[in-house]
Length: 532
Image 1: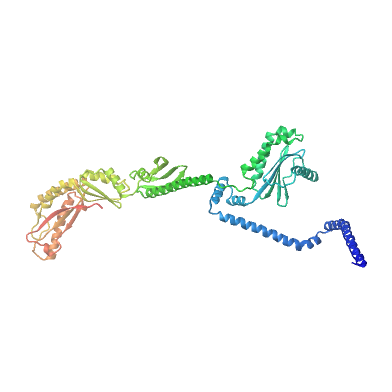
Image 2: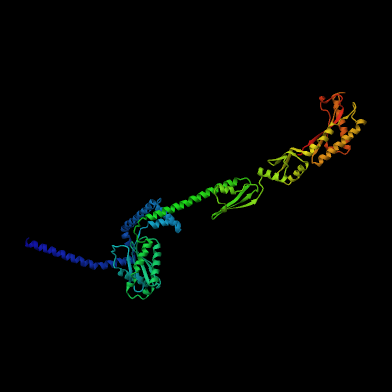
């Protein structure tokens, strides 16, 4: 290298060193000016600076939102994966026991969080009393420095905002770190948390701090800088973390827990099956009970283990107790409250009618619709009493005795035979009784009167048919007229003798075949009048 080249190289090297020194000096000189200019600009009008940063802040905000959405999707996927798992059932049972919504339980279980440190700080001096870390590979700053900084921050906030001495800082957030502060009369408990822990962490911190104040009240009050007396507090803090499971470590699955959960499912399933079976058997019982004649169920309900049934019941209806036994329902757990009523069920009406009328063995009774049919043979007294009793018995509308024979009527058949055997004779072409037939006509009138009196006493009614006849002398129209007049003549005599006119029916011959030689007579026929 020539001397000229050496000079050039030496000059370039010198220029580079001078330039580097000049740049550092210039940077040191201009930095305060730039900072003051930025502060002054922001103080006057922050809009220009915000506009200048907009191209940078936009992508950053979008990236943050994208990350949040991705985490939410992962959380939803995790929830769906456990929708039909034992874990999902466990969460639902937890929601049922605690009364919290299922969504809240799922959210709390899926939120990732960690508690990195717990600091116990003396409130008056700001000195650290105890510190526990949840991680063995702890690389955090000196714990005494943290406690001192917490005291300084507390004092700064109170002095700056003129707060009362009792007002304490509760939460400090720095990036992903959250400092939860719980204050006591003599000490502070500070937790360094990442993520989103559930609210129960704060509750446990309060309980732990209260327990420490209770155990170490004298030591806290007389604290002079020796934190050795608070060494046992480390176990208290660790015990607090382990009991609530707030260390953020993944729990190992417990085989015994799975067995207990399975047993819980079996027991709950057993009781569910039993309850379902009881309800099915009760519903079947109620269906059969409502179908029983003479029973009307108006209401039924359950209270505790007991059931109640209200309604109307006919005394002749079936007792519900055998139904309970058939459906395996304990009778002591069912209370019936019945009101008495009379059902219109025909077998019930027939049974009540038999009890009311007390018929003799020779009488059979049958109910159809609202008519009582009697058949057989009975005395006139029983028939009369039966009619009187049925007048106030609203279940029977009609009493039919067409096939019921009156025993007293049988005894009167002899008198009827005598009456119907009598014949009153008339001369040819005459419509008046001759003198020789007057006594016989009066005797016939007396027998008819006796028959009417007897039937009236028995509650029976008869019809007295007066039949006139004629012989073949003369033409048919003349014979029909004469036969009618002869019958009317005999009826008039009996009416004049005091017999009721309404019981008589007067008849003559109605066709030529009725004309018989030498039969110029009047006869009496007795017919029974049926009750309507």
